[in-house]
Image (cartoon, rainbow, N blue to C red; front, side):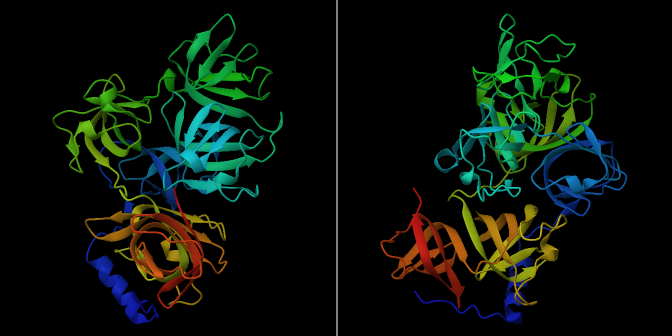
Length: 481
C-alpha cells in the first residue's frame, strides 16, 4: 500500500465536480407551491429562511413562538430543534412553533455504554448522527463529559414516545449548576400510575407530586398527555414537585387539525406495526395508518416499520386525528456503523451537486445535512460559507457520514466548522491493512508511531494525527468495543 498524492490544484475541484455531476448529490430544496395549507413537522437543518427536513420555507411575515411565547424573528431558533410549521399554498411558513420535550437535571450519563442520558426519569437517546449538542460555555466539551447524578440542567428537543423515551435531535446545556429559582424544570409525557389520594403520578420512571400544583380544568387521568412545570425541583422522596400541569395537544400526541388537512412529518417510529394493529404505527406518538394505496418510497413494507427507525410520512388527517399515509420513506442508514472525519477542507462544490472534500475524500451534501458553526457561531452557516484550501486557508470541519452503497460515496449527515487545532481525525471501520498502513473511510493511515495499536480488517477505530500528502500519520489510536 502506498500513500496517495493529495497535492491540490484545479484538477482536484474538477474531479470533485465530476463526481457530483454523476449522481447522488442533492441541493437544498424549496417547498413547492400549490394546494391547501400543510402542517410540516421536523428538524431545523439550516437557515436563510428556515430549512426543515432539508426543505426551504421562506419566513417573511412568519409568526414564531417558542415554548408558547412569541419571538420577533428566527434568530432564537437553532439547528436540531424539532418545529411545527403551517405552510401556505405558496410554500411560505405562516407560523413556526417550537416546544422543547424536556428541560431537567441529568441523573445518569450512559453515553459511552449505551448512547443515553437519564434526565428526570426520561431515557434520552443521543445516537442520531444529526444530533446537535450545544455546550453553552459550560465546559462540557462533549455529551460524555456531562456528569451524571448532577445539578446540570439540559434542554432536549427530539421525538418522544410519551412513555419515557426521547430520541434527541438537540441537547443544550442550560445551567451547569441548577438551583431552585434559577429556571423552571419541564417534563412532558403520558400519565401513568395516577394516585389521587397521594396526589402523584408517573411520567416514564419519574414520579410527579402535584399536591401544590396549579391544575388544568380537565381532570387528571392515566393516559393523558401533559406537560409538568416545576419551580421547586424534588422533594425528599425524589418526586418532582409540580408547580403547574398543562394538558398538551388536547391530551393526546396526535396533531390538532381538521379532517382532510395535509401533514408532512419526519421523526422516529415510537410504536411499530408489530406492537399493535398491523396496519398502524406511531411516529413521534402520532398514529399513522397505511393502506394498499400507501407508497413506500424505499421498497419497504409495513413489516419493516419498527420502533427506533427514522421515517418521513406524508398524508392527510381523518376526522379522528389519524394520519392516513400517502407516502412513507425510510432514511438511509450506514449498515457498517457511524463514520466521522475531521480535517481541513480541500475543496467545496456548493452548486447543484453539493459536495465537500476533506483528506482527499469526496463527501456528498444532502438537502437535510445539518450545518453547525462552533467556531464563529454564524446563525446562517451553510456550505456556501465554508472556505477551502483552493481559496486560502481552509476551514477545519468535523463531519458525520454514512456510506451510500448504490452511489459508492460517503454522504454527510452533519457538518460542523470548528477551531483548527492542527489535528485530523477519522473514526470508522478498517477496510484494509498493509503494515504500517491501514485504511479507514478510504483514508490511508500510517500507524507506525502508535505503540500497541494493531487493528485488523473489520475493527472500528478512532485515530488522530496529522494529514499530509495523502496520508494521516497517527499519533493516537484506539479500537472501539
